[in-house]
Length: 529
View 1: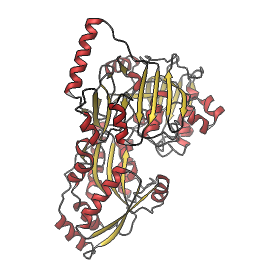
View 2: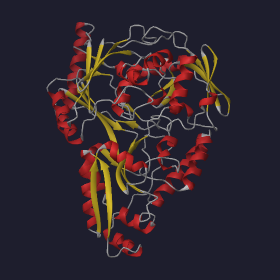
View 3: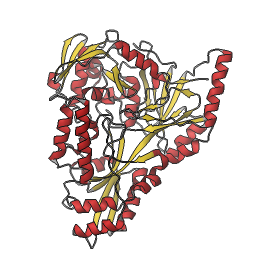
């Protein structure tokens, strides 16, 4: 039986209220970086609290995101900024606290056969429109997740036809095959539980702009190009936030986000870039909170491209890049050099031997590959400042061994259209394993995946199929270590970096967690006046 108690969940959640550091998804502990001045200020404030009694909370928390969400529908968007907002609006069956699965809407669960997990729900939960949350809403939400264009790939292992209501507060969740990662997937942003009646009455488009959830905050308004406003859910079943209003604003320019923080225009900023983070550390009024993310940055090779099928050529292209210098130039201290095809924050990460930078060996490999006189390749990418910088550095390093790399930058929609049909030869790319599970982290390499990789190696499918159905953690770790080693040896990409998730906030902010998926639970946050 795989069973969790409601009491255990409560204790874990309570303990997390005391933490502001970032917890790793696979037992990795990430440090919270706070300036010495900010720490002294916090200590002084704590002393004042003891002397003067209980401090007052601010009534509003102001957050700056780096882009505007496309919508707030968990099944029909792909933006982290969308997930950041929906984290506050929706609940899930289970969630993660310090990397561990704990109860949320489900009080208990059990594995009733190798493909079915039964969840027992709370009976005291209402949606923001006042309707009761029942097993019907859960079954509806997960079936919709399996069928919606924005989430069906993520839920491909789930069996929508056998997700069934047992009674009003019991639901069975089925997978097509035995699937060890089921709880990790349900604990992700995609696992949000929607209000069935609201979706059916409003329709998908309107619901995505006016979401009805059961979470600690409920939707108030959305001003296009400016802000999304939420307010505290006074009928929330769990511990209510200490403040009333939550405001998300959208500031695309990185330097302007930092200025907002420095001038007191906001309380919390997501996505502080490396150079701004270093500068802000010396500001006594600011905290920089940073830790490892689920994200993996890499140079993608089209595995179905006739030129790039040449293994010697791929080896040459990898050895021609000084990866540590590239990471330092682009990310500074806000990322670490990738030592695998998935982040150390993902379960069962295994560290591989570092790639060797050797331009002369790369030239020799290029000769062996049949390109001693050089060749021309094309890098395509969506418009992104970081990726543009990376592409230019890669272009220069490849030029040193006789490889000409042309760079084409285009709109996101155009790039995705070309990538999905195999028209992107090389790309600057990233993947974000939001579930924290290796099945999610490595799914982009499956032959069934639709992306710029155009994967065509059935051996990878075999590894992932074996890992997905293995419930023994020791055996599962062995399988994924083999899979990572296989990918590493094949040079199907140039592994670049594992960037940190980095937040900036006022030194009056407490309990801001460093979420590796960039979706912190802001309901825990307090700001002392």
